[in-house]
Length: 535
Image 1 (tube, rainbow, N blue to C red):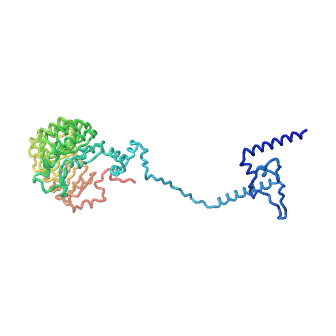
Image 2 (cartoon, rainbow, N blue to C red):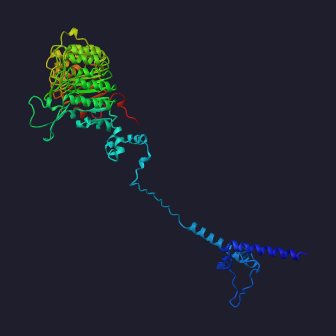
Image 3 (tube, rainbow, N blue to C red):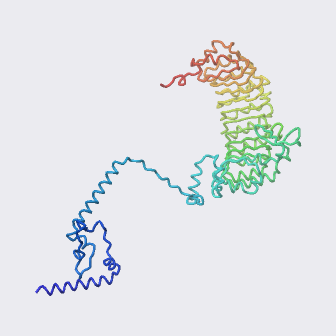
């Protein structure tokens, strides 16, 4: 009863195989042309043994396939041999790798060629600007040569510039390329001079190229400056393009140009004005937030332009927040200095350079109630007629008195100066002609002195120095350099004992001084924390 079912099932399998062969012709070709691996075939044990071609032949009703070939009983031993051989080979490879010495792996560097690609284009202007701002200032100029974008961004980082060509400002290129300027010097750009001669005359305040055509009285004439109309127009362009200006240096400006700066630049804090007059100071008075002003009325041999009490009074009433004021080559008198002292109550530092003040101006210093530093530079006279001593007054808050290249011609002016500066704590004399022992003796009126510096005061003697410094009980620092009449051999025991208790001590009165070498290693002049060494 089971025989018909088997026949029926075998027929159905054969029909299914025939259908599979028709739908997969490629597989049918592979089964007709098998390419078995030679290692997987069974070879006869001896050469005389004949191989039976029909021994392992599959039934005619079912074609041969790889699974049927491998899993037959006769080929199981061959399959086991192949698996064993593969395992042995893998073990041998592992042993070789263990015995092989380890060599450091060579790191391969990835080299990318960005020759024709701008990698910074992926960064926004804000991010790239922050990156460029971390670089030193001297690299701003090379960075601006990379491309137009870098030139634009580098220009936004520049804060200070000294302009040499006025056309750069007049054409608008200055404010377009450098919009964030806070410090601008226009002095050289305002001068019209020929550069053919190659001779540059330099002063402490100004420099100019020379040619054969110049006046004997001054090197800078009105025709050597740009016209006032051109300067005022350029100042207007600068003020509108750079409203964040904090410092401005210029020459020959008028009231109109300075007014435009005062209106457009409310944060302006420092102004240096050359070749100025009383009329131009009306424009400066409109700068209500200005704190530092330097006025150069005249420079000997270069130009001559005066500022009188009128200009000083205008300045005082307009700029009441002044902290530092420097007057160079300015005229004036008691009234001008008094107006500054009364109106500018925040004034802490006053510098007079080569002043041409009238007699009696020194008494007006007592109106400067908050003055802390007084500097006199290159003054041929101090105050020949200071007035009665009882009317001089004093500056109660004054701490520092500096005199550089000043001439002491009369006793009255020296006595009046030290009486007004009676509260001073630091005195500096440098290249002062006429400062002998008698002139220096008036400094004993200043009882609070803690520091004294004398440099190139050739008329001062050892006796005159000793009589004053021994009277200063609070003295902590003494500096004597190139004072040829101060001798080592004239140092008394009282003076040498003073040297031993000073915190700061410099003694080089002449090139043959022996005291410095003899005190070396003794610890003199190193009182306090400086004397002890940390272990």
